Image: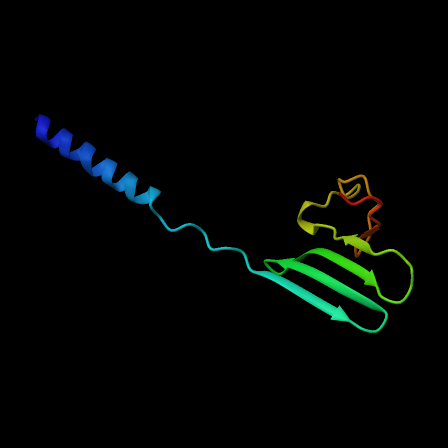
Length: 100
């Protein structure tokens, strides 16, 4: 009577241990795109095909560089962005004041 219970426990432990050794999920696809002309350089970061960050750097003018905070459509509420920033179709411009 005791032998079947022990073998059943060993089989359950072996099947549970096999699940713990499963392959980890694949790394997300990350793309760095750069568009450039004689006035500006635009750098875009995409993760899993979704734009995460856009940086615009001016070449000839003394205007400061700025970043565009892209709205995450999956987390967007009806009232706003959840970040305290105004809602916009393409994103919100942000200028960095201090760099550390």
